[in-house]
Image (tube, rainbow, N blue to C red):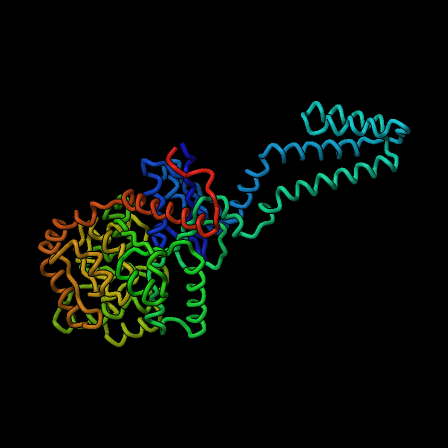
Length: 488
């Protein structure tokens, strides 16, 4: 039987990918899916130094198959494995023996027996603790602290230190890309990682939104992003995405990657759900739970199109709606341009920003919402809409190809609107407000077509991609595999 495949997932970017935020949802759910497979694999996740705790919810559910290291501790762990080798331990024992002898040396001379006793010392040192004591004592009585002996010790110790250096330098002093040798294959969940790999890599390109909306970044940043994405996708063994639309539009259309290098693996609904808190306890901190509101859990980025919901709630207000609110979540506070838009539309009392919410509170926000609405201009897909379905919240999204593709299993029960038509969006919110139970019932009836796929299913598809990457890498490097990574 072959050894267990060791899969690395690199989560250490400018921040560590969290299980509840953006691409982190993908990375952590995949790790959990891999840990639940019948075929045993080992998952290694790397976090930024001091941010290992971010990964603890995933590790606790990983069936003992998920290990997390910071970049620094990961280096030390690999060094520890290398130091455990018999040859390295023997060299260290020999070096300790010589240093011990040097400390105990006295002013005795060896005369004509020097070479013979030296050979005896070298024979016993490093074999065992007893051998170390014997050789150390012999050196003490035979050599003394004369110049010949001190020179012998210096030369011998330098020789061993150099040998130890050769054994450990590739691990202890290696740049981070050499540490990647620890795993059989590495998943790069986010394409913007400027690192050279010496193992097969599968990079996930979720979307190239900045290519389509260049105004979201500075011209200099756009140039840097494009250079980095081109470099990473070119160096990767396989480039993967989650929808066929992104494959056609971005990986082929924008990057010009060959079909032979591209794989599409559909996601599954997130599995890191938490039990909602008691309504009374949560409502004390989040009084919006008492209101009728539309929920949009998303980071504030221009292409996320938060302004569409601000315009839509003003239209509803003009139509006589006095109750419906808009609720945004996200790590950052609302940007200045959106605050100005809220003020210009005189809807300060109707738009609420909660910031980053705990996962259990978010589940309650889904349950109590009139609906979850995603008006994004460009996406690879939407995990929040899947989460909303799980918590029995009706959903609606912009009519963009990737979201139409993702939620096509819902058929006519899925509500779509043009992200640029604020009147149509207002109509959609009215449908959710006035016919919530009907929409919810029809979507829940169809949701099994989406939820029948689990992250265990997705993980099995990803493992096939990883195996392909290993084979492709070996062929490209003309490597003859010696050990297959099959189930134990």
